[in-house]
Length: 466
Image 1 (tube, rainbow, N blue to C red):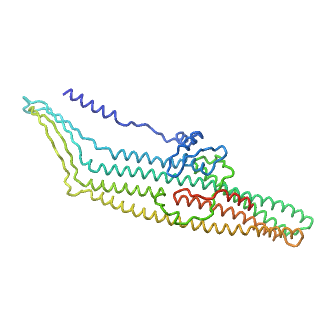
Image 2: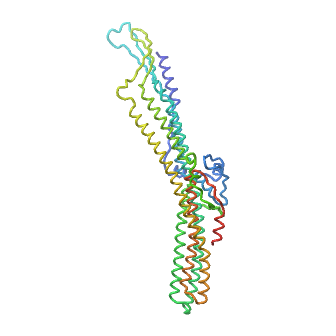
Image 3: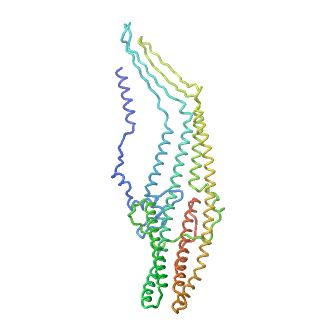
């Protein structure tokens, strides 16, 4: 009996050695601050070269000359705190896959009966040993593993889809900042010229060469130009904060951008047929949804297989108080009079139908989104062309008014109106190109891939227009 006790103790110690242990993970100021700290640039360079993603490609990261749009995209994927939290879902899915493959433990029982009263002469201590196991866990095990594997693949694709969106958002903010800076250059030049003219007119009014009306017109034009500069500076600061947030940097950190960034442009807007062809095989969210549907199919199979009655088999070895030793075998079967897992089967089947309809709806939405973006791009492109065509005419008009004012054949108000209209059109051109760049990013996200476009042409046009 003592040997058997030692044997049981040894089994218990062996089981305890395989158990996980608890380690405290405090949620305090120091640990949170440490987690918010971005990795070193050397670590980022190494990770940027080794990045693995269905769409994003490895990159030679070098921020010494400022961030390019692609570098900003990779940096956002690597250090954005929100993505770090999203990627933790992979570990959860891996743990669920591990759990799905684990079989239930067998059940061991031991009993000891000691005669303590009555006719105890000739009796001995009785004991019983039992070992049982639920064999029905094998029936649904394969389907549960399939469901967990598909769910893990779904999580991988869903994380990659969100990484892709964050990367594209970082690129968009970089493009926005570049275009705002170009708008600011024009707005500040206009403000400077109008302020200088205002000073000249004030002096002219003092010597009565200009009228008070002309002075009021000059002041109004100067104030309007200054207001435009302030508005753009506010927009620039807002866009800078959005970029640092997307990158996962602190708001007070300065993010220098690379000079002479090639800006996206299009010789021709692609056709909707070309973009939506095969979109369900490119868009990571659609692929994730399809894999999620396969996971639900496996869940339904597991639920159907689990409707069979639970069967528990066991072996027993016992000795009674008269020293009679018995060895036996037993089976326990649930009688499925009430619960045949019909509720869980109905839930899984309805969930499968819901996922099927959601996939169809999301595919329809993706195609409609591509159509809307392409329509907006076409409209913006036409507005851009019409606005660019008006520039030479406005430039000649401004020059004509300037000459006429110098000769005393036109009023200063008409000159300022023409000049403000020219500056407004030049800024509008940059804004339209900025809108087109944002739409280009939106189209890449909707298409689920990088799209080829003609680079550098917009930079040349912007320099020409100015």
